[in-house]
Image (cartoon, rainbow, N blue to C red; front, side, top):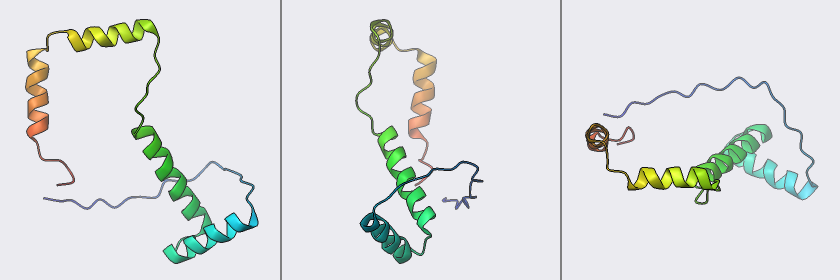
Length: 98
């Protein structure tokens, strides 16, 4: 079963100031108009999408030797039976988007 959640707009309290070239501004304004968005909505949506994509798609993590050694110990350790049971239950559950 799919549930449709209505996304409530987040109250905006911060500001971001940008300097932009005329060609960039015109392109942003054209794209925003095509999507029926204001310039601010368009820029925020695009920037937020790019930021979350970047943060979720990181493949390289820099850690110190102590942290990496602890990570390796966890990988090499025998799995905890309770954690395996919980992981199996999680993986057998349907995804929320299915």
